[in-house]
Image 1 (cartoon, one colour):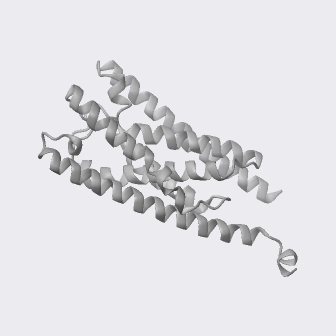
Image 2: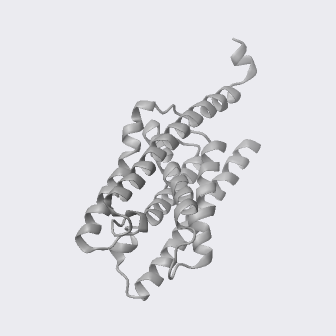
Length: 219
């Protein structure tokens, strides 16, 4: 009974983080539209896409945890991708965008999306590792999302002369600088994904072993 209460308490916390994130993105979208900016541009920011992705994953995970259910290995991989995307959001923002003019972005929303959620999602992964082992061979699937985003950003940016981030704009240093930055981000994403997979698998096995009763393990 106590373990169920604890599990549901953490599920409620997960739901709260996911809900606040969706509310924050919704508020900022309203401000964005109110200023006459493009809705498609809003959803072209990796930060917004990743936060929506991670928030939905947290909400679904909270419901699953509340009901004591699990969606299997595919869900574990999807969850891992959301965690890595958010980690990348936090790292890239702190390293490259912290001093950039954020325009109409509200300070509390900036803090929540770029600092709180990255830390929260990584902490959630480490505290509640996946129940299913994620094969490192699935690494190629995991990196498809950021690679697709980079391709979309560069192609669309060249077509309309608008880029979500300065480091993607070839006007600031040329395509060589853009390519180098994208390569660094891609390598970082692959490394981060591999690390999260290894940690998740290791912690997940440890949690599974700890949950087996002592008498059963003795057999």
